[in-house]
Length: 83
Image (cartoon, rainbow, N blue to C red; front, top):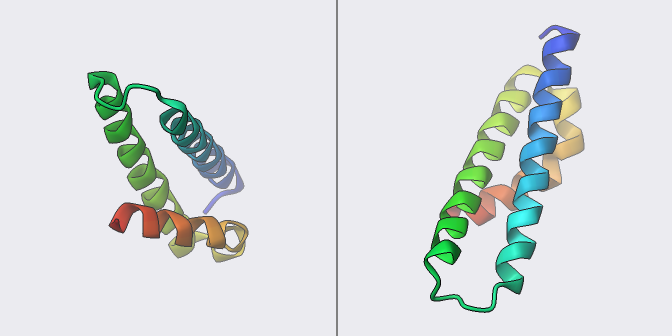
C-alpha cells in the first residue's frame, strides 16, 4: 500500500474510533433511555464499530506493521460487535 493510502486509512480509522468513543460516552450519560434518539444513537454506534472493524481488517491484510498499533482496539471492537 502506498504511504499516502496508509495515511488516509489511519486517518479514517482514528476518526471512526473517536466517534465510537463519543457515542459510547454520550449513550452512557443519556437520561431517557426510552427516547427514540437514544435508539438511533445505539444503531449509529453499532454501525461505527462495524466500519472501524472493517477498516482495521483491511489494515491487517495490507499493513500488518501499522495494524499492530491497533491490535488491542481491534479485539475490543470485535467483542463489541459480536455482543
